[in-house]
Length: 404
Image (cartoon, rainbow, N blue to C red):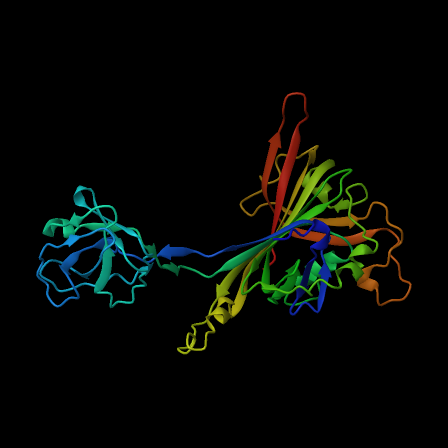
């Protein structure tokens, strides 16, 4: 096993087939996969009953002793028959699996067994001493097999990214959401995403949430979460162009010192000390039924990818914290108080970099460090006041907008 250092693990995300995307300036990233499984078994599927000794030619129980290391065939089922095979909920019974009978008696399976519904006869043996079972004892064997598992839902992965937003990846993330321009209609698209983390490529991902915080004298870091469907494919050539990418060119990172929050005075604040922004995307996954020949063609994996991901709702929530707070904001009737906020993210030490949104226009440069403007036009859903010993009275509000 080899360990790959952080600087050699690129993260790339793009829309569709990832022909247009961005390397993400990430501080950390992780992929996890969850498959909801349930053991497919009945209560007595690991109870072994010996109907008779031999290959099933008779169902009469005639006591017979098991000698150490001597293998003997037994027919399974209740005394007097009919014979009963091992449960097909069992995936495997490994060789030498112990069968415990009353009074401290033990027998062992002589071979690996993969039950298929026709295992009426199995081979058993004793180990350390001779074992003879009464009729009552022979009906109460207990063993621990490996049971089959069945899926109760789709296999879903999760990609979680902590990254620094910049003039490169901000337009990319908002192209994913299709809300970067008010003229776009409908405001939300349902395009899937693709990309890779290190040498592992994914081809079907959807954004769940995007959030970031802003406070004085600090760099703004964002968090994004995605659902992943389908296969993760390893390809050692996938990151060949990583070190030639624009990720290692000038990166303008937003900072709280020059960034602006517009419209907050209408909410009752005079001074702000922190701010947070979050987009949540609520989705509904639609899978199709596989054809009858799916298993014959060994194509079951293709149905791990949903036919469609429907974006049921998309919401924006902006939270502000500061002082000179008006505590009567939401006391204006059942309809709530409306607020319209905008946030301008600015770089701290910009050097007239070319704005990627205007890169097609020659020599047009961004001269004020503006990276992106976020908007939230909604209702004030919550507010709070807090104070602690030696501190000052702070207020906070949360503005909520349903985008779709």
